[in-house]
Amino acid sequence: MRRSNMVTAVLCGLVLAAGGVLASERIDLNTASAQELARLPGIGPAKAEAIVQHRAQQPFARPDDLRKVKGIGDKLYDRVKDQVTVGGAAPPQGRGG
Image 1 (cartoon, rainbow, N blue to C red):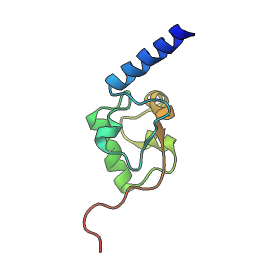
Image 2 (cartoon, one colour):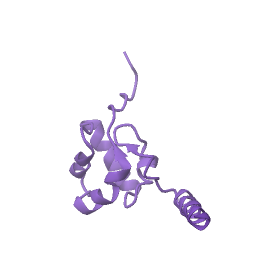
Image 3 (cartoon, rainbow, N blue to C red):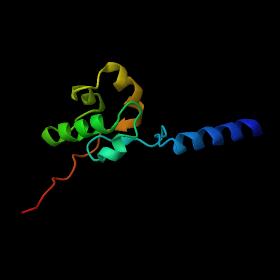
Image 4 (cartoon, rainbow, N blue to C red):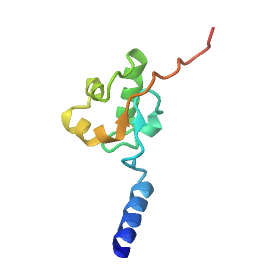
């Protein structure tokens, strides 16, 4: 049992060191920054920016709406689906009235 705890600790450390997302830490597609989104496996800066641009036009209603973003297909969605969630829409940017 002691060895399994050590293995778990090492694996968690590797995930954190690599900038990955732990399964218990889901990223909200409607509020995350492009930097946060880029931490998802297979999502680099360009796809993260595409996600931000997409949600500015139409916020995500459910996680699988991520497939509507250009460059994100079924395989990539399957890699990230357990690491994303959808909460409220991002607050509007710019000056408020």
